[in-house]
Image 1 (cartoon, helix red, strand yellow):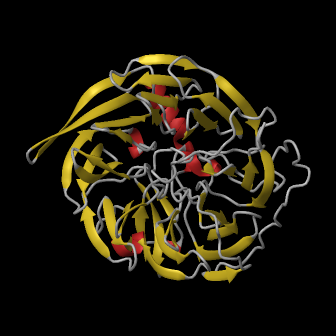
Image 2 (cartoon, helix red, strand yellow):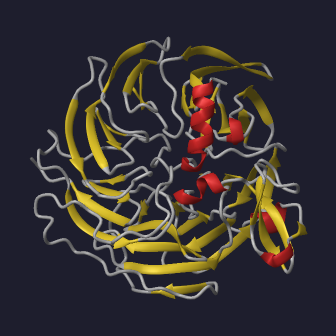
Image 3 (cartoon, rainbow, N blue to C red):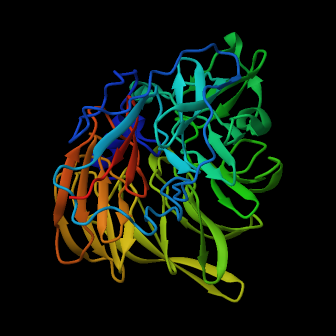
Length: 483
């Protein structure tokens, strides 16, 4: 590995986990930087504190939602950052988005999801992990589900927070949450009651003695978390961060464990295990479900490689892609027979996946050494790939041959862009939203707004003319007015 990348990996390892991590403490709920008309936002009150006992608090009721727009999972409806039928004004208004409401949150970097008039997100308040539902129109807290949690990452990552990083998934009246220590819950989206739940280290981990009964870091291998009286089991070194994906009746998510599988498919209604796949370390990336060569399959980065797994849990193909500490983080993107992936110390790599009868192969179609990204994911439009490298530069790269078309900008360290028609919405870790033309003709900024003062190691949810953004201090909703 390049020494520069090795140094960066060792000293930035705590930044990882699908959403980066710079908030170890709660900041003021007055987190946003007001834009035009934002002096009169409908600001929600701070969330009340509660005990460490698992509980459900129904805070408010809501009318049956009429909104049809959805952003139900990590990276949106199609899990690739594309906004379906974008309604954002064109041209982009010079005054930028207007604040509608905000709500206080605590530690964590799960991105918001929106379904049926509700916004779902998770956080951690002390030793309590919380699944939360807000009314999308007003920011009113509808309900919160709490569970005790005992987990801290490796010391180099502690200052970046110990809250949940996996983004929830909402579907047909249910919402699925994965906690930082592996508590998977299926909750009723209306009132938050538990439909079913699975505790990964309890169900799938190798049990061992845990003197003192408190979580401990096990060198550079894993973290041992409590599973019972004097007992514990290992979880990944930086917790569970992969966001679950749904296909048909299957809820699919990275799990691992001595009695589990690298990837496990659960029945979405009952929580029963349908299949387990592979026996290797998980990474910190999220799976996607795509069709390649006419076969629907799960594509995911595990600790040592990139794999394709069919919907029965069988391995179809794989390609080595080992990163130190299993730190693959960005979500792969698939276009036709190409799988696009990058990680720290790795060039942007396009794998060509081919099938001849029942034999599959994964070969390198091209690599681009000019682009590498530790945390960020990519967007693709009209044969061009768009992404931001670790130096803050945006790249436009030709899909057909991997050649760089243009580079430009200096936008920070993290950005997983959203593609709204011919525009990229690029929210960086500093709370700055940059709007770029998604075009091959050159780097062309169309607008920029500093939306929040605290860190934003997340990706926005775009619903109609609204943006929902999770920062180190809270959840905020903005509208984009006509210019």
